[in-house]
Amino acid sequence: MGRDVAAVAITKEDRRRYRDKVRRCLEALSAMLRDGRFEEDRASIGMEVELNLVDETGRPAMLNAAVLESIAEPGAWATELAQFNIEINLPPGSLAGKALAMLEQRIRDNLNHADGRARAVGAELMMIGILPTLRESDVSEATLSSNPRYKLLNEQVLAARGENLPLEIEGVELLRTSSDCIAPEAACTSVQFHLQVRPEHFAACWNAAQAIAGVQVALGANSPYLFGKELWRETRLPLFEQSTDTRSEELKAQGVRPRVWFGERWIDSVYDLFEENSRYFSALLPMCEDEEPMEALARGETPELAEMSLHNGTIYRWNRPVYAVVDGRPHLRVENRVLPAGPTVADTMANAALYYGLVRALAEEEHPVWERMSFAAAADNARRGARYGLDARLYWPGVGEVPVTELVLDHLLPLAAAGLDGWGVDTVIRDRLLRIIEQRCATGRNGATWQVAAVRAAGGDREEALRLMTRRYVDHMHTNAPVHTWPIED
Image (cartoon, rainbow, N blue to C red):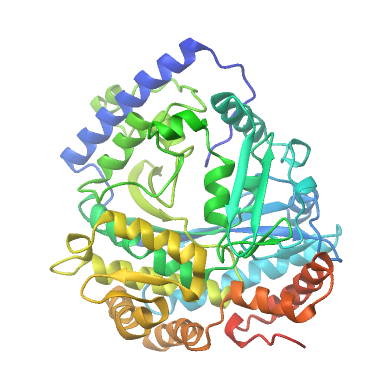
């Protein structure tokens, strides 16, 4: 959510005041967009990486408080939902020149240092979409992190729903269970790519990000197992959607939108997304600040729009708008949330290169893809990519429905290269990172396919096979060799 909150009791009056305040924030945002009040610097990128903590056997280690205390870098590292999760936030920077290689080294250095500190208290770091050894008993209210915001969020989601959260995911196998808290969401660990853009470019970049979500998740799938079951190649998507769903069955039947949401239309302005948030979703954390945004604007100040931003943080779009103020200057970002963490830093940077390259290339096309493809087709691509991974068939205008690997090799990799050239990325770095994507397609191996093949090769008891695969995964992860080069059997 990007913001800590105190443990409080929420009243009906709090909800009314908050709704009114969000509307005043929207009024201020509209005025700022109209009057050109936003930062005009060059576009920049940022990244967040969520990680799991495992013990020496490969099972979850409920030690995030001890690990963070050992790392002792609160500005960069933070808790996530459960005690076996932590997150690192990388500072913003440029894409130009050798910046991506420098960012890759910085991430590796940070993770290596943090892993050393974690080992000192009995844990190890693991970059993966869903921890394969996770059991249902590992995700309960007792395993939530101690931050009051998680407890309050859990209470509000369950209160809004009025009953337990059912989980039903049909993939290679079937998982059917339920939870009395939101803790299963903690199984979903992701990497988030941020792109700061000018307001006039925001809609094109967001539309482009939506258009390629299915491609991203198919290529980067790394979450085939949950609670011992082999499900989707990227099981995070249905799990995240269901584990935070505030809707009863009756509300679903009425067409009420889910809080984990792909969206339903292409946009013309960032305002469209914040306005939809206000119109479609009730508040989960209705907490007001003292600032009056229009009064702040009238004084020549930059409003924080705290209520609008907090509300936005409880609506989990796969590509989310972000409004932020840094050193008194407002800016806008597209936050891409589709991809799982891992398998390696090299794989993560290859995913980043593909994403940033395609977004730029598609956003600058004379006849953009969203004028030639329905939004429903983009949403369907996202679900197909998550369910079938590298075996998915996706629709693309002018091409039709084709295997995702063919789409990428024949059409999208050249576009991504051109987009990275537009950002000024060093050609050697560009080619190295996109070569990783190319080889994933050529070998048919990403994190999800490697995990499944390794578990099947291990044979025998599923739980033990998952544990052994997890330990081998961690070992390979530390080499930083891209996952398409990992052997199935050592």
